[in-house]
Every structure is written in structure tokens, then in C-alpha cells.
Length: 74
Image (cartoon, rainbow, N blue to C red; front, side, top):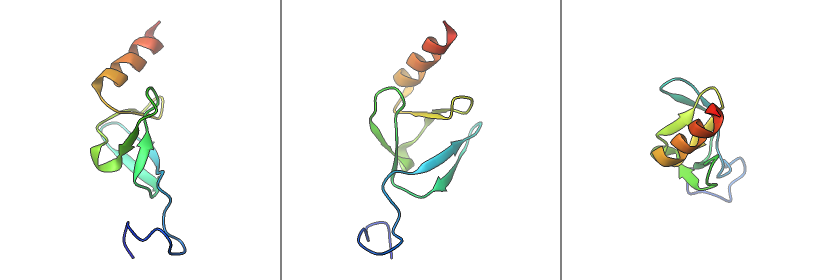
């Protein structure tokens, strides 16, 4: 079984559940992507580079990360 075997029993859903830490994240429930908290864009786990550990949110890129940071500072 691999990530492309969607119809097999017990195959992981596409949406991953992730715990975001400082400088790393841990996959709690396997999946292919997480959703950007700002834009709603699907972010493949292998492309995930921006997140907030305190807010436990993922961001699609630096612009979304900055937008959320700015929002929380006011």
C-alpha cells in the first residue's frame, strides 16, 4: 500500500492533522495536505514551510504568515 492507494481500507484521508512546534511539525494523522488558515489553500505537507506554533495554524507562504501576524498584533 502507498499514498496513491485511495480505495484500500485504512488508507489515510487527504487532510493531515498536524501539531506545529518551533521549527518543526509532527503529523498526528497522516494525509497529503493541510489548509492555509488565511487563504484556505491546500498546502502539500512536503511544501509546508510557514506555520504558527502558538496559534497552531499553517500558512501557504510568507505573505499569509505576515498577514496573520499583523492581524494578531492589533
